[in-house]
Length: 310
Image 1 (tube, one colour):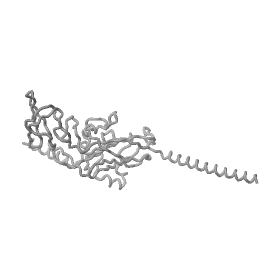
Image 2 (cartoon, rainbow, N blue to C red):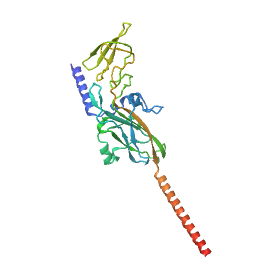
Image 3 (cartoon, helix red, strand yellow):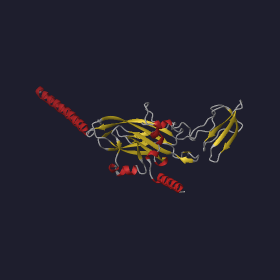
Image 4 (cartoon, rainbow, N blue to C red):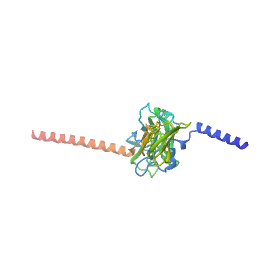
């Protein structure tokens, strides 16, 4: 009896911790974190696209250049129609959620909160940032978040200082951004989610359609050889077939409920040296003064020549 009480107490505390404590490892890209050491494949594709197979636009606002050891904003825009809803895991209609991944150059990382401005604090209210892994602080993740309130996600970034880290150099770097809205169509195990189109694996005639208490459905079929088989359909999907209908292999059994998708893009940023900027300004001033002096000298010569001619 005491073991049962301990088990129930531990279970209760575990559930409470899930509700009250933010858990980065259970965030939106949980499966990507578990399956891949790096979220960007050699082909350039971000692995989120393996499960969120629909292609949707994603935009990003990144400054052209930043100074060393400075805080700047990277804004990821995840557009979609506000009134859209999708099928939840339990089959009910739910609002879309969003998530984003920002892959920064080595040395760049999330800015510490003590360096956030009041504007950044306001723009990131309710947003939790996590690292892809403990040793990859330059890869930042966000989500899931309510999509209707977070079509733009602001990432406060701290640039590195090459004078303090000899592995960092001034110059141009690439940033890879991914934005997702809605649930995935495929689980990492390879199984389809209910946010997908289901087709028949074989040809046959539908003998019956059974609906279970949890909303899942079973389509029973038989073929000309007398074989019987079943197609399991998850909750929330809309059937396009009925009993007595004869179908071919690959025939659509349900509609396609997906209204979300994933999009990615690559952009660039320049880590700029203040000394170089000052030097460039001095150079431009020198060139400008030289041009002015040449014009003045030319006018002086023309004036002398005109006087000698007289």
